[in-house]
Image (cartoon, rainbow, N blue to C red):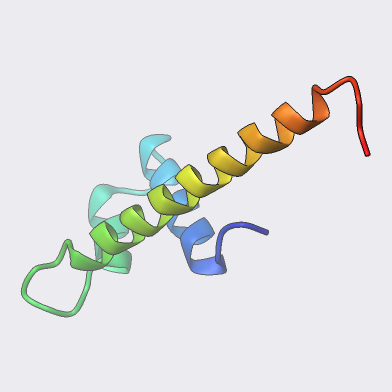
Length: 73
């Protein structure tokens, strides 16, 4: 499992908003931070997910290159 439970839930909730299952207010209420800047926690989660995606993509490309070889160890 690449995503944490919280990251997976964040993505699933956003997709629920996009598909009209929940409102933007419901999404924001659940994911806002307690500080004055209500977007902080969402920004942090988005950044974490983006970093994980980049790392996973790099690893996947390396694995593909290895598996596409005609000679394996």
